[in-house]
Length: 272
Image 1 (cartoon, one colour):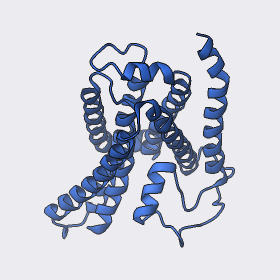
Image 2 (cartoon, rainbow, N blue to C red):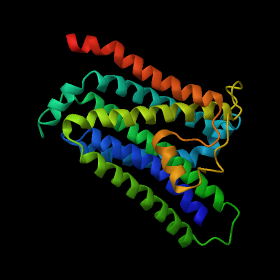
Image 3 (tube, one colour):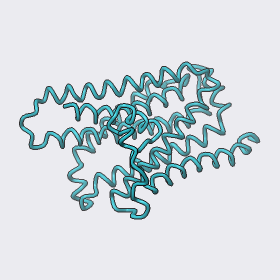
Image 4 (cartoon, helix red, strand yellow):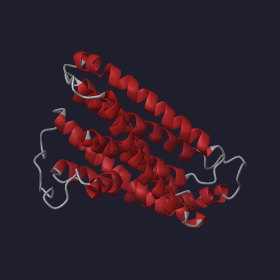
């Protein structure tokens, strides 16, 4: 049961951190809670549906069904996060101005929240599907496991991950409005780099890339992904105890794209 609780905690933590950062980034926007709730609900419903269809997907795609879905979700989430980072960096003044007018139309700032809300749904979809698949797989053929014990372990994992997400949001909420977008944009840039690294690993596991797939180092003896700190760093900045060259290249490539993109578009935004 501890293993189930730990895995659920890790998956819930990643989604909770996404939601906490998004909630802080959209602070002051009209209807934020409603859209965030809708994104979480849609992601959870989609996660259950994907988990139920996983075996059929694998059969249709020669055993690669779940991998292909995972790659698709990661790719879409990564693209939207990259777009958001560049867009927010060139529209920060506009977004701060909109955030000061609660309940009013935020036409100029709605684009970024809409993109982030979709990412919230995708984050919950991916992490939730992995959780359902893991729990279901661990119970397959095991007649000694009590359903109540499994549900308790799942509840503990979800609650623990959610509490960390709430803590992240509480910390970000203390930042002045004029600074919040800069801080959250940095965190989202790290999340985008983390997704790029995860995408590279998913592509390698599915056999779509074969070069640069050997681990560069192994830091698990000092900081394991199974530890609480390792899970937190993995969710927040993409820490991996055994990263491949492809993962490192993807991680640095995403950060470089964001840095160069913001520098190229910032002058144009200032002239507008």
